[in-house]
Amino acid sequence: MIDPSNVLPVADNELLARFIVYSNEKRKDGTVKHKLFLPYKHVELSVNRHREATDEETWHAGLDVAEERQRTLYGLANIRASSCRIDKLSVVPDPILPKNPNHANITGYPHAKEDQMAIAQVLAASIEGKWIAAPGQDGPDDDS
Image (cartoon, helix red, strand yellow):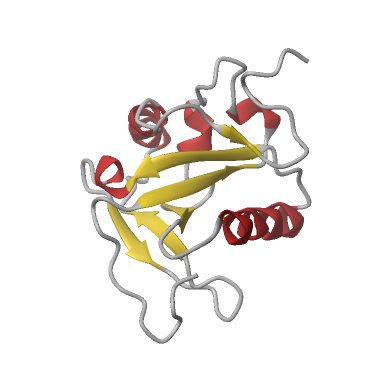
């Protein structure tokens, strides 16, 4: 994990994880639905930086998110920070200390839901590869 006393700005080339906690945010073909990138009731969206984190630490952060929301962690979708810097969006560190110094937010979403949806569609189409199943979950390449 990132050193909590030295949290650097989010670089364009950084890989960010968006945790999938709703089954209707993912597809069997490995793509994700735009719902994954809608900022819910806010105008910012929570993501997790991979920077200096092990896979185990990243999955642990995802399990914390799922537990907090009383949901199931289905997996994650990876996206580059540069892909999130569209329109007026920014990616800013937002450490949750002491548990998760790698937390960040995509900020700058417009207030209008239809505008948020348009941006979310672009972001969903920009994930790197397929979404990745959480340990113990079926992934996009599983036939079950």
